[in-house]
Length: 112
Image (tube, rainbow, N blue to C red; front, top):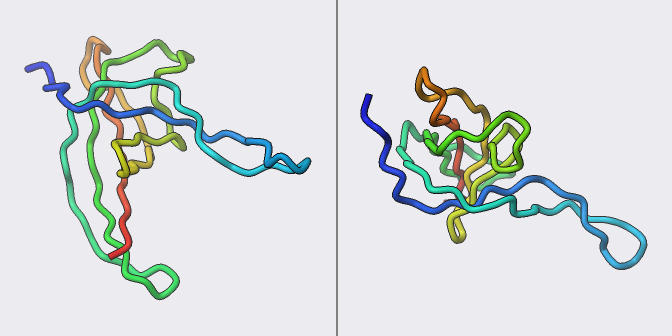
C-alpha cells in the first residue's frame, strides 16, 4: 500500500460552548490542532434548504492516526477547516491494517 500524500493543512475543530458575556452561552468551535491531510473528492449533489440551493460534496480525508482518546484524533461531529471551507466529519475508520492512518468521511456544503 502506498502512503497517502499529506499535502494540505486542515484545522481540526470540536464543538464548544462559549460565554456570550451576558450570563448565557453560544455554540462555537474550538481548534484542536493542525493536521496534514490527503483530501479526495467523491460524489456531489445539489439540494434545497430553506428555499436556497445548496451544493453538497462528499470527501475522503486521510490523516495520520492518533491514539484513541487523543485530542488530535478526529471523531464524528467534529470538523476540519481550510480557510473559509468547512468539512463536517460524519465517520472515521482505519485506513490501513497497521493503523498508521485514518480515513475521515466528510461533507462540504456551500450555498449556491
